[in-house]
Length: 406
Image 1 (cartoon, rainbow, N blue to C red):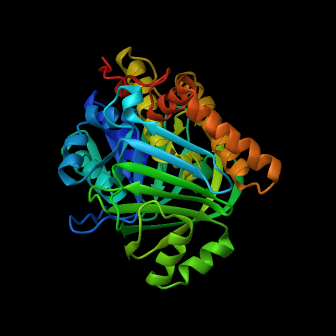
Image 2: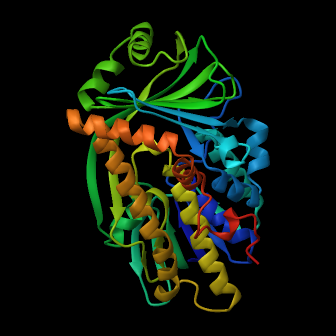
Image 3: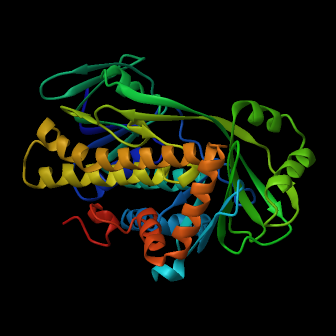
């Protein structure tokens, strides 16, 4: 029998962020569990196929957690502009960091580099114990603790369990928490491409009839990570092409950066919207993809998960400092009220964008092009959307606001 104050299940991005935030500001004894061995795959000579857009608010969180310097020593790619086009008309929308009086709109970060920096920090904190690989077999709920049993019959107890184990969360299922789910009917193809023209630290997105194609700028000014969301049939056909054929298909629909001269190996994944009907039970909280999954068209998936982690850590630590039960349902409901409504709003907003830009109805095409151009031409409306995406809005956790927790 091993006893902890907190057990975090899942060593992706949200889980380690929560564990580090809790450990740095307390003497809580924390375990973090993952079913896989934490093996680094980051290589300085090769870009990871998975790249995440990090908002300035989340960058501030990583700075407070002392993750950002290590990540910057590996590789980060700031972007200063964003250019959005509608392939079904003349609608366009352009964001520039100068309009918001900030130095960047955000940062492109390779997922394996970010994970490696988080894992290094986990191992450096004395009150965190990393248990990976470790397979869980059962979850039992008790009044004062939750008990996790592993497949090799180890028994772990904690006052609080944080589920950060992904969209198909095992913890969420064991806790009998249901989800609202909807298939986006999209497959996302991701890879790295080299183009003849430089990206100029600009993130590009073109909404095509079958789904959006995004070019995300990387450190090399001629390299971009692409995310091409497409219908399953179209995605299957694209994956079956050789590199030159795939490059030709890109250039048919996206010619802003000239010829595509190189393409990395491609991978794809199915896109589904999921939203947990509740985020908490007594002694249990869901964060990140365990609580919600979202279409990548707005680049908000990782940002929402890290904000979950920072908000939950703030609620737990404030209760711990006051010597209250930090894992009680009333305490954890504060976290749920804080995050669930905002996440739900983002899910609805992204779902609406996906549906509107997927419509081939002439009237809808006309309205959306008019809307894009109107937003582009009215600076205060454009700034509102840009500020919201950058995390410059209310209800942010202290870690995101350049303030210490205590």
